[in-house]
Length: 198
Image (cartoon, rainbow, N blue to C red; front, side, top):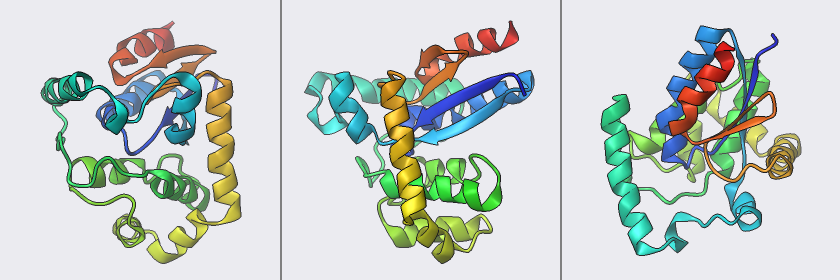
């Protein structure tokens, strides 16, 4: 497949969730492959000038809520604007997504269910039992998948993808790279769509 989109994201990002299904639809329409790459923005932000949500200025935090509400309505995706368990560490959830890909051979197999757990169902992505249950619900052996997610192989893969993102100048979520052209944010998906059409 000649059209490949590298997709850097974290399940802790509402913007990644808001754009996720649209990205998949765009890629399908153009016959493009998505490489799902959950990464650690806790390591990316310090080297790219970003700040975690709790450290942003109050006016920025307040405006973010308006934007989330606008985009929720605009794209017609269910979204809890202020979920119970957020901000949340997304590392283990990201590793679970990578483990599911390795075990099933299906890239992104658990991405949407993990997103929905946080942004629709008010579930705690930092809780191992919750992650195991999410995996069970999708037909995986949750306990086994959680063990794989914590394995040195998957942890190393997560760290490698994070360093790759830093090296490729990724700074926000979601972030897409197609033919070395960067697209930051779910609000840039129209531009990615056009690029894939060329």
